[in-house]
Image (cartoon, rainbow, N blue to C red; front, top):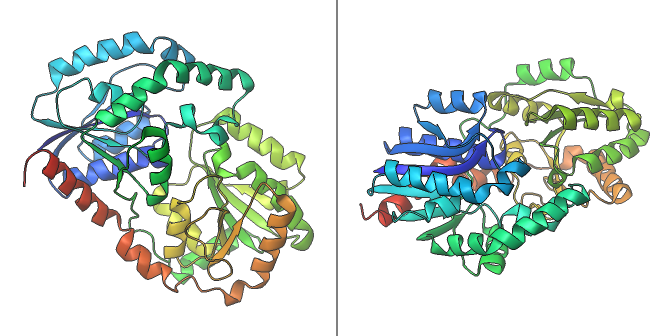
Length: 392
């Protein structure tokens, strides 16, 4: 079967949405032998190499994308040009997948059967918590863009033959915004990769990164990840645990944002308690998950969290956001409202003192191995594609 998958951009290929497309397109290609091409506005060199390694054609349609104001101001003409190109280059027997606006508009301009993989209602239009991270001028800009394009986004989402999302927790949000209940194909985990590392690896990393307790955090520096609030909590925890160390990785290429984050660390006087690991390669994550005392992802408005599930598979306790579906308080970690620094610090102090009483293996490891396996859900997506393409 021919498949064309449309995603807005691959400028941050380690982010969750891009990672989903890369992993699942690779699975469809290499496990289920589907003839797949991926289309986007733009990609960086890392993303190009990742697709080339998987022998998946990556077609870039533009020189700008949704992170550019100029792109938004010229979106209508850009869409018109791309629609013409696609009509001439996409065969009628190709199954289409779109990830998010505005790619759903492109996909639904073609007569082919289509699936929309809606991670969540388009954040720039509908997520007030996400937009709070931007300056007022940007919030005003996207308010105008929503007035212009939200109806088209709604129509395109409802025109898709099949609507899917990556977690059950997203269903109510999508139904509220789009009036449609999606099916679920989880953003699964590579259960072969994420498992506890050898004790020798753990000992070496603990020697390399001194800290007690030792914490790990992964961020794209957006407000959703709670990273800046986490720094405030580390400052409070330092009074109780002077040798505490937060290891953190930033998985997007954002030099200005990274510099600002580092300056905040210094401003808080916790530069000796924080260590920047750069952008860790995916295959290095299990070693760090296994070696630290806690993996901290206290996200805001994010019930489902990849790193927390991965950490549990590596048998490490977790600190999640107040909505976290992964945490069972004081069984495998704690949930915290990271915006409340004092309350979060007190709860984490109690957790640290009970570290030896926690059980990360109880029920969660078996549940995740069976229900969160990436391969299980790639197979499910493949079945949905075949069914809706009229094949068996």
